[in-house]
Length: 194
Image (cartoon, rainbow, N blue to C red; front, side, top):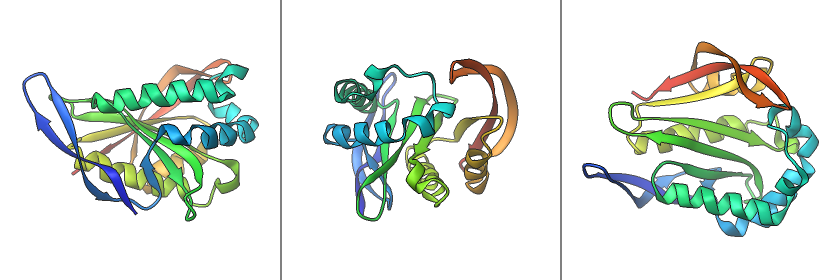
């Protein structure tokens, strides 16, 4: 399928504009506000499965209203050129997860971070690996030199996803994020787009 949100960069001194082009993607597409009900249902069904890998979430997070606010904020940040919010879909177009290209920084850095999750139903079936591969393609089309990602030390599955996609381990961040209610160490991965 063709992703309607492909990218070409138009630089001015302090301004970046992203214009739509066509990039071939198979399982990712830009998040739409129309996805909110389906995403909220998916999050609710996977609340226990995702909780060891996520910050603590209150009940409000799992409502259509909160997910709509998050989607709207993500799309606003996307239009500013500092994020690419994606959904991960199966062959039928059903949403099975999310992937964000976050914190796009220009100038001498030309870098961003990725974060992703997939539902328990498709975990281990290659969706995360394929989505990260597509994020690399998108980031390259954006002219980004580097992508980074962080994983909990015990998240071996996510580490395999990153390594399959050419990410290399480059460090350890002690007490990096408060996940599941505890400040936890994270492994730092990066991929240079060459």
